[in-house]
Image (cartoon, rainbow, N blue to C red; front, side, top):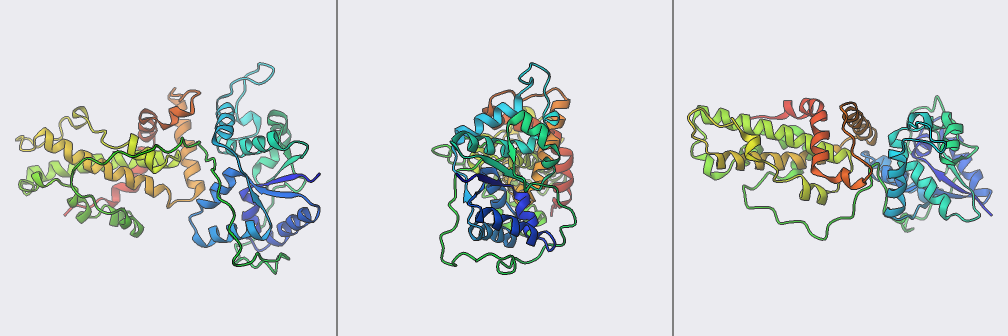
Length: 387
């Protein structure tokens, strides 16, 4: 019976480099000729779908077809349970203190580990092997010991892979799939943090000023938070008094504060792989009187109702903007920021518990945003412009 060879995204990376491409293509061809089943794990497939470079993303999806790879089919329940167990284990089988680094993995590796373990559980008599060119190879013995994962003998760390080159299937010895062939089947996929099921409905937004279109984001942050877009967030009831200098300065302080805080929350939600529905349900309309204390003008021209409405409109818009921003960045950027934020929270003694649902609560994202805001302020701050 053939083995299942689970392919990591590092394999695709090498496949599209000048020096390593022919070598990896030969490996894949030989595995196919031996009757092995090549499979892209659920989390690896998600990384491919999240590839910011549209050309590279299309190339990787085409290579899945050309090299006759299947895409892992697995349920959210299977993956989330394993991810949660691995993320929060504190002792090993012998009762000794256990840390991820001692097990040879990092937090971002856990979805991959979970995918392989899920496939092992359902493989029957088939052996499941993990094919990677990532640094995990250096820790293969300890990873195998702690997680029971078997590495393919093709796994190794490659160097001098060369520059990225256009994909040429014929040059790599593979017959391209028919142009009209069905694309790889999309499946429910795990991300670094398993998303909870989408809600049945999203509440209708409360009535307020028409916010600028997020399509402006395609032109960059400066377009998204241009003076015109920021001005459009000001409720009509405030416009009549907005020309007074003291009021104008207060408005700018309110908008700057809540654009920055909203952007940080949106980024935090994005790097934790929240869905748009989760963002709409849990991060919007969170401005309270306590959060706007002391933000009015000295003469009290701006009433609390005015301040609350402006703060809420600014933050809601910036939450979406921050969430969208994470999808303009690389998977590596998202993973690094997530890891940094979680490590900082742990340093401050904040632990999000054993329930994956805790990762989808406002309190968690609010705390994560607070430790990331120094970095997010540096991104959004210079882009904010006023008339």
